[in-house]
Length: 408
Ligand code: ARG
Image 1: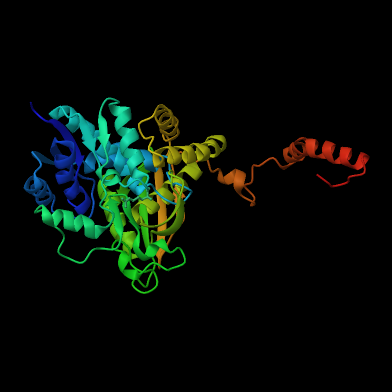
Image 2: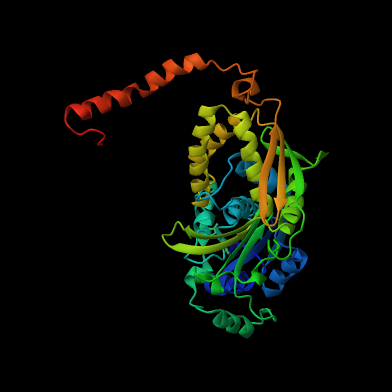
C-alpha cells in the first residue's frame, strides 16, 4: 500500500532537515519538501531543494512567491499600518499565512494527508501554521516534529543527523534564531535572552549603527502613494516590491529601523525581540502621515482601533478569519483617497516626515491660519465651547452643592 504523504515546510536548516528523516522514520510517510521564497536573505534555494532530496524527500519544490507576498499580503499590512504592540511590523506573522496558503495548495496537488512544520512549542509560528492550515483545509492533519521529538539540544540534533548521513552545518552554530523576509528581519535567542544586555553589533545585517556608520549629512526621500500604496520613489514610478527593497537599503544605510522590544507572545510568555525593519517602518510612517492629511477625523480615529485589532489578529494566527477579512474591507474603503506625496528626512538613525501633500487633502489653510485670510468663525466657537462644557459645569455645580468642590 502506498504511504501517506506529508508536505513539509522546508527551510534547508538543521531542524527541518532532521525533520525529513524523522518523519520518514517515525510517521512512515513520504515527505514532499516545500521551500518558499518570501525574500529572505539570499540563500541558494536550488541547493535547498536538492538537499531535501538527498535526505530522502520524494519530491522537493521551491516556490518564489515574493510578488504575491507584496501584492496580497504586505499591501494589506501597510494600509492597516500594522504594528503589534504599537512597535512590531509583524515580519514573521506576515510570511506565515502565505507559506500556509502554498503548503495547503501543495498538499492538495500531491494528495497529502499531513502537513509538517519545524516550529517549537514555545512560539507564535506554530499557531500561525496550524490555525491557518485549519482555516484553509480543516481535514489536513498537522505534524510538528520539533515539538514531538526528544532531541533537546542542537548537539543531539547534530548527532542524530550525522548518524543518518544528513548533511550538518560545518560552520560554528549561529547562536541566534533568525527569520527574515522582504518586510524585515527578526532576531532572537542567545545573549539577547537577557533583556538587560545591549544587542551585540554583529547581529545586524540590514541596518548600520546609527552613530558610527551612517551618512554624515541628512538625505531626503519623496514617496508617492496612490490609494494607500506607494507608486513612486523620488518621482520615479516603481513597483511596491522595488520600493520596499530600495528603502530597506536606503533607510538601513542611515541606521533607521532597529527595534529592541519585550513582546507578549500568544502562548503567554514575554520574549525579547530584535527587529530590523527599515523599509517597513519608513513606509508605515509615510503612509500614516498621508492619512493624517486625507482621512476625515472620525474615520482616522476609528481606524486606529481597527489597526490594533488587525495587528493582534494577524500576530495571533488569524490571518484567514472572518473578522480579519471584515476589517480588511473597512481598511480598503478608507484608502480610496489616500493619494499624494510624503517627504522624509533621514539622518543618523532617524526618519522624520517633513512634508506631505495631496489632491484630497482635508487640511484647509484658510481655516487653520492665524493670518489675515482666516475664515474660521471665531464667534461660533463661543457657543460651541459653552455647550461642550455644559455637562462638566452641571457636574461641578452638583459637587459644590454636596460640599465636594472639585472632587471626582
Ligand atoms: N516574535 C516574532 C513573531 O512572533 C518573531 C518570530 C521569529 N520566528 C523565528 N522562528 N525566529 O512574529
